[in-house]
Structures are given as C-alpha cells and as structure tokens.
Image (cartoon, rainbow, N blue to C red; front, side, top):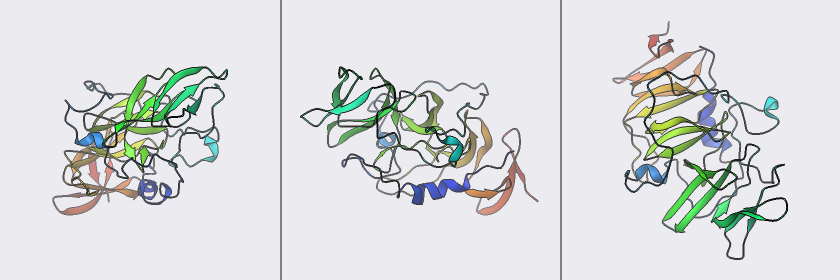
Length: 273
C-alpha cells in the first residue's frame, strides 16, 4: 500500500478551509452536515442515485488530480475552489437586475437564464457550482454543466459547495455521501453516512453513523477506508480511524481498544508490529 496522505485531511478541515477566503451566499448554513442528509427519500431533491455495483471498480484516473493548471506545483490534498474568472470557453456568469445569476457566451447571448441565487464560473472541464433557493429555508447547492443540466447535488461545507480535494468533490443523494470527479462524473454512488475528503485517492468513511442536528460531532457507526473507485482499502469494522498515520500504519479503535494496523489487499486489517 502506498503511503497515504490522509494526515492532511484534518488540517484541511480545520485551517486551510478557514483561510480560503471563499465568497459564498450568506444564507447557506456553515456546517459539515449537508442539509439533504436530514431529508427523507421522498423529500430529498434530485441527486446522483442508483444501485451501486458489486463489481470491483478501478480507481479513477483523476485520483490525486487537482482542478487547476499548476497541479504539478500543488499539494495533491490542497483544496481547490471554483474559478473566479471565466474560462477560455467564453461562457461566463452574469447577474440580472433581480440579483439572480445566469450564464452568457462570448457573444453576450444568454445560454443559461438567470435562475440561480449564486453562481461560480465554470471550471476548465465545463462544471460550475450554483445555488438554487426557493426561500430562505430551501437552499440547494448543485453542480451543473454548460447547458444548465444538474449533474449532482453538492455536499455543503464552509458556507457553500464542497471544495475539490485530490480531484474529487463530495456529493449527496438521499442523505448519503459519494464523490464526483473534476470532469463532473459521479464516480462513487452516494452510499456513506459520512466521508472525509478524498486525499491522495483515499477517504475515511463511515456507515451507520449520524450527526445530531446542530451538533458537528459524528456519533456511532463503523469506519473504514475506500479508494477513489469506492473499493474498500480497509473494511468498515472499526469504531474510529485516525487519519493521521505514517508508513501505512493506521491507528484504529474497536471495542474500546486502540491499536495500529496495516491494510491488506482485500480490505482486511493486520495488526502492525
């Protein structure tokens, strides 16, 4: 197993995001918990849903990639925001007199009507993050393509859509969390109750856990580690996993006992010596 860089995940969520300078719509809740995660399937909005395949998938080619042109100079686990300036395609956002956002082409023709409360510019892959709001209590953060088609509902983090980390953003569907790559492809069906950002092609996830309303502390569940295709690197058999580990040794907790393990090829853990 290659040496993961998940030690940076905690730092990303604690300091790097706080210093990012994101300009976000003021009505979006500042929380690690997506609003949709509390919705029932009937009330949940559109999102990437469908039955997950049981066939083992190959990790995405975007594992470890970032959304900017200077990727070779960037830390692969450093968060990326969507661009503030129009891409070379010429499609750029505009704001109408009512305050809503839409998009125009290079000739000034409206290609997506002004129907978003907030919008970021398209990235180089033709993906934009926008905010839809019917009222103050119903705010949705989604990703769209250049035709305005919704790709997925974004996981809400730091007053807005999730950042791109390691070439992936978290998305939600029916209260679960999955991952979308920088090209707008949902590569991991939303199936986890919580997931840390995908760092160096790995993410610490949990099944069966919950985040009480108004409380950011994650309660219960079983924790494991997945790769960028959703394959188990470490099966969800632990009460907790510390992302800050070195040389393949993973600190886990089970039945009140903490110990270090190494992950095997089948997602099984072996006690580290």
